[in-house]
Image 1: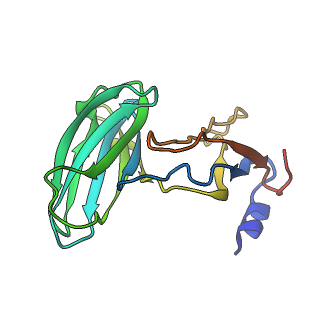
Image 2: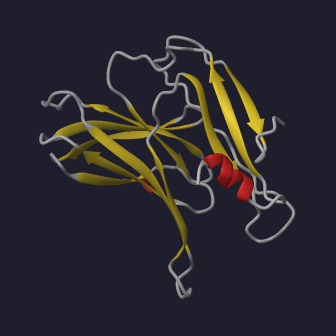
Image 3: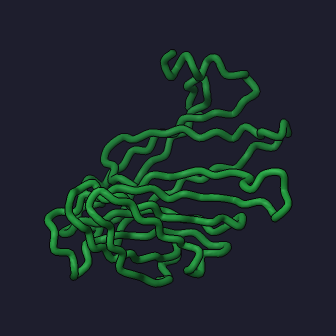
Length: 198
């Protein structure tokens, strides 16, 4: 089933939308060194973990920096990931409660290998109180950010799973790294599930 047929198969009362972003800054993510960016959200009592995987056979020494969306530096540390290994960094040791932001990973001064070959995700867990029938209410993961140029798109879903008429809020997050050589500009177009511009 292709994407449009999937959209047509959804109930009319559902609220699934497609958004398209036209990015007008072609080099907004240009940089002189490798930087990897992950997102975090400390609201809703989330436990947030950065999962960092080293795809190369050589050890990677990384500088991990975490900031709020307002640009407040929450701290940094050096993370060493063995070749072919994965390391987990708990973000809750930083002041992330009721805030959100990004973290970055770059080669540390101790890194002796070649170009970094790392990949990762931010994982989010909401645990239930002790004695609950299950220990986790929900969990999800967000892959690290990739730079986008030109027309890009995505979907969001505001269907209220509880059956209520109030839609669930969604946010579109945009990140412009401090190394950007130009201001960010975009046009966001929103379409309903029938493909009609809203």
